[in-house]
Every structure is written in structure tokens, then in C-alpha cells.
Length: 113
Length: 111
Image (cartoon, rainbow over all chains, first blue to last red; front, side, top):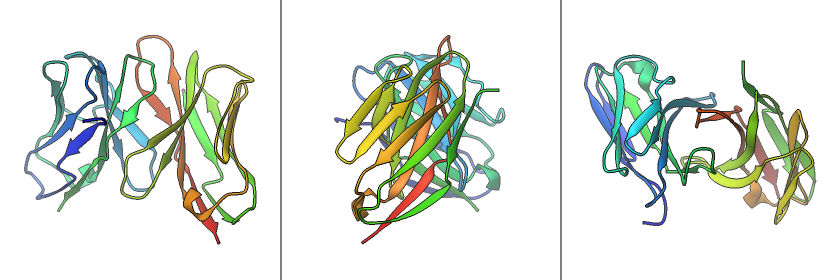
């Protein structure tokens, strides 16, 4: 596709369950980023991938959060044992290389009950 | 600590009433300053990138400018369809790839 896509668009889960969020980036764009946007807050950086490696994981809020990227393409963000404070919109962004303009997907809205 | 601050938090304009949104930044080794537009329920949509003080970019009714401490997004004769949240973000040099975002300015343009 022409742009960044994310799935699912909405996810409702119960506290304590694990969730997986998916990002399909723009073909050929090597840098991939995950951000979190909570109500009334700015976008919060989570993790950055260059190819399949993650040189910067400094934004992951706890060890319940992990992410991987395979084939220099699709990325999944996994949240284990979800908590109510994990409720937010999770956004994936993609750029041709580090420092270039980042293009965002539509986001996944996660609600933890 | 690197920081991006946007003001005002919210701005209400009448159609045709020009104004400016402010983005002040304290970022070591600024690499680029980005403006995005975000509509409710959607991801941020890229508008402009500015790389050096004095640079200006325009698109339709929007013009972005950059100084060594702040950036402005000028909106000339806005229309209701310009209503959205406008986000400012900064990127740093070095190994960090992420953007540092401000909290945004929510613009409402009334007909």
C-alpha cells in the first residue's frame, strides 16, 4: 500500500490479558517508530527500529512492553498483562531513514477494562 | 532536558481571521522541526519540515517559520476545514531517531 497501516484499529481487552498490535510500513522505509498518545498528552516515544534491530528502546515504559520487526518490514508491539493505564492510542511511524520525515499510520486505540 | 512547548493549547477563530500558533523548543543539536496536522481519530498528517533558522515553507493557507528558539505556524484567512490539532515536533542529531512532540494546539474555525 501507499501508506503506513496498523491493525487492529480498535482493541478492547481485559486487565491482565496480552495484546499484539501490528504495523505495516511503507515499502523501502528502513526506520520505524512506535509512539503512544494518551488523552490530553503529547505523543510519547516508545521504540525505534533501524531495519530489524532496535537501537533505541528507551521509551518502553516497563518490561511488559516489547516489540519486534521482521524482514525489515512488519513490526509488532506486544503488551503483556495489560493494565488500565496502558489505555491509549498506539501510533506507528515510518521514515526512509533515521532523521527523515516520519509518516504516521492511523493508530490502534487500546482500551483496557 | 529536551523539550517542545506549544501555545496556545486551544484557539478559536472566525473564518477569515488570521492568526499564528507558537512552538518553542529547547533541543540540543536540533536536526529538524516538523509540523503535523491531526484530525480526531486519525494519525498525524505531515505538513512541513524546517531545518535552519530563517527558513520558511508555505502550503495553501499555512506558512511555517523557524528561529533559533521557536517556530510559528501562520494561518491566513482560515476556513472551517482547517479545524484540527496542530502538532510541532523536533528531531535531534546523534543516534536518537525519535521525534519530541509538543502537546499540540487545537484550532477551531467557525463559519
